[in-house]
Amino acid sequence: DLISETLFLLGKSNYQFGNLEVSINFLNKSLNYLDEIGDQWKIGEVHLLIGENYLGNGQLSLALDSFAKSIEMFENMDATVFPSNRRNWSFALLSMGKIHRIQKEFEKSEEYYKRALEYFRETNDQVVISKILYHLISLMIDSDDINIARVYLKELENYSRSQNHPHIRLYYLISKAIILKNNPRMREKSQAQEIYQDIIDENVILFNITVVALIDLSELLIAELKSFGEPEVMEEIKRISAKLFNLASEKNASTLIIEGFILQFKLALLDFNFE
Image 1 (cartoon, helix red, strand yellow):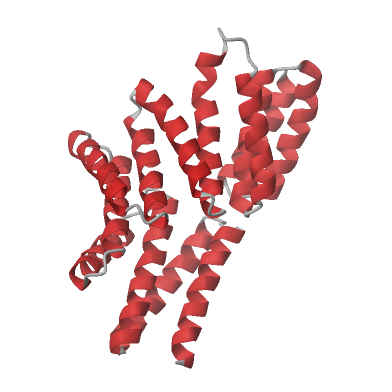
Image 2 (cartoon, helix red, strand yellow; image 1 turned 135 degrees about the vertical axis):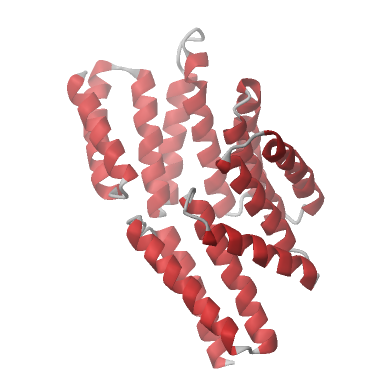
């Protein structure tokens, strides 16, 4: 249907430009037409994008509901039709994993990540495999399963060595830095700082990865500032703060998640100032 497809494309373009509320409005209008037609595949695709909008806004319950509807639509398709739509189904699983990790429901998160990973291993989509491995490594760090995180990192390193792809390289570098950051030894933390700085100094390829590098580096620098009180470290933290705000402004990423990161950053600085 031309009207529903036009509304969907308007929703998609507004999502890409960060106009999340406008995007949701167009997508819900598209759903109204699609419900009349009964196009399950397109309904599943629209629910998937609505879920990404809600996730970007930090509305996790609404995002979970949308992703669940998307998964249901794809799984209810005829068995001969479903295989061609498993990619979108798997992306919905991946997003469910992200939300459960945010909610600290680590077992559920791991289950969804692994289900998504299983599909992308079958299709040998190494870029998406690398993305999921990065998420699994972050999850393992949250779960204090450092040994499993290292196993995933080794696999990610192999992809990075064999594939000259900038996204795979970034997923490997940020994953390596996250593991080093959580090592108690100062040498490893210093290595993590160097990797984060390299990611930040590059042109932004993956926005979310750059944001993670900025936040993690700021945490390491704040710890360093509290330990040694060197003025130049405070100046570096201020530069990171400015870059984070500029990135959020450029990408129109005024989401609750980004705002939460910035708030944590401010509170950490305030905590230091009071001490």
